[in-house]
Image (tube, rainbow, N blue to C red):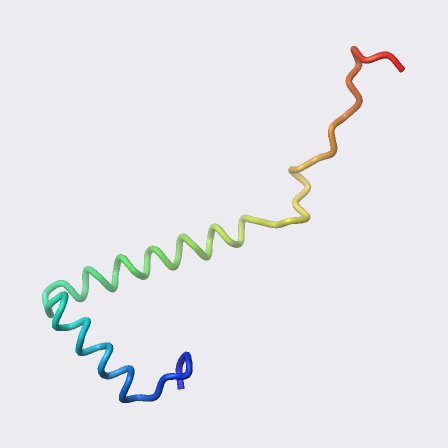
Length: 65
């Protein structure tokens, strides 16, 4: 089961996608979807909440204490 759906539900979704986009456009659709997933994964890997690039502000040398 994928996402709580059985094989009949997945087959029905595949049939609807095939009817909407047509068999000629499915490779283009798959390629675009694959590129999107790849770019999202790469973007998620680049984000780190504990990233060292976000530093605490340094003391301003012009500021007197």
